[in-house]
Length: 143
Image (tube, rainbow, N blue to C red):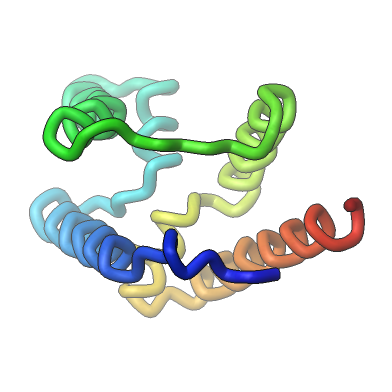
């Protein structure tokens, strides 16, 4: 495996990570809630009075962000090396995993680890290990 150094963008990744970390910290500071996407979306599926507005605004903001980025930065060249069936299957598996793991990568990996949660450490190690294993099998064993 080779890294395409022309497409490697460490500064963009660092900037995105800083933005995610600051947003997570501000969210827990002002709302007392973990900024985990699966929990936010899950709360929309079983709504409670007074709890829907901020969740809906958050999800709509996430959906609008790529279009706003495109307005200011130009067209985005996205490439997915999988068919729709594989993308749907992957999404369903991730969704099932967030239910079994009591949270998602953002909830455990960003917020949980920053709070030194042992449960989040185990969850993060598990999903990162599974991700590494999956990439290895798909790229080196199945090809």
